[in-house]
Every structure is written in structure tokens, then in C-alpha cells.
Amino acid sequence: MTRSDIRCITSAFWALLFFVASLAGATAQETFPSEKLEIISTAGKTQTFTVEVANSDSQRQQGLMFRKSMSDDHGMLFDFKEDRDVMMWMKNTFIPLDMLFISKAGKITHIHTNAVPHSEDIISSNGPVRYVLELNGGAAKKLGITVGDTVRTAQIR
Image (cartoon, rainbow, N blue to C red; front, side, top):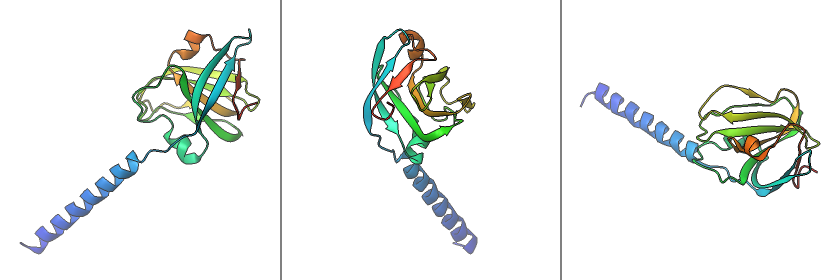
């Protein structure tokens, strides 16, 4: 074996090691606390969900990525800790989602319906919000959830 062969094998070994390490990091999944969430329509009708709450940067970055399905009465609530313009995307997200953008006071200010799985298109809050609620795609229309409805949880009062 020549020095060139040894260098080539060594390089291949390190490349494989880094690849395996990156896969291990990609599969490390965050865990999320969950809580009950209610959406109260302007007409007084209440819809109840169990939501996972993404409070930390790493939880917000992961979100619902890599999930193959979600129960109809479940969702994920992102808390950005302050009012700000929010940009979302669907990279590595396998299920279509409705994104409900919510003010600090709990009012739905904007709804983006049926976000396309795996899309890297930016989805904007269209103004400052504190929270984003992700539900299964089509849920807002199916349940009659509209801009102006109120969201309540232990965090949003």
C-alpha cells in the first residue's frame, strides 16, 4: 500500500465518520411539553386541541419536522417570547399544515392554509405576532376558524 492509498483510506474514513455523526445529530429529536388549547370563534363556538409547545430556539427550529402524521385534535404552538414579524417554512415537514399567527392577546391575525410539505418558500406572519399555531392542513376551513378568533392556553390568557 502506498502513502497515497493510506491518505485516501484515511480521508474516506473521516468523511464517513463525519457523515454518521451528522446523521446522529439530525435524528436527535427535541421533546415538547403539551397543554390544552382552545380556539373561541367570534360566534362563541369553541374548538379544543392538545398542543405541543415549542418554547426554546431548538424546539422552534425543529417544530413538526420529520413527522409523518398528526391527530386531528393536535397541533404545535410556537412561542416567540415577544411580538415580532415571524417567518416560517416547511423544510423537512412531511404533512401539510395550516399556520395561525396569533397576537400576544390571543387574537388570530393571519392564517396561512395548507402549507406545502418540504417547501422552502417563506410564510410570513404579515406583521408582528407572539405565537404561531400549526394544525393539520385544512383544519381552519373545516372547523370554521377565522381571523379575529381568540386562542386560549395556559400561556395565552
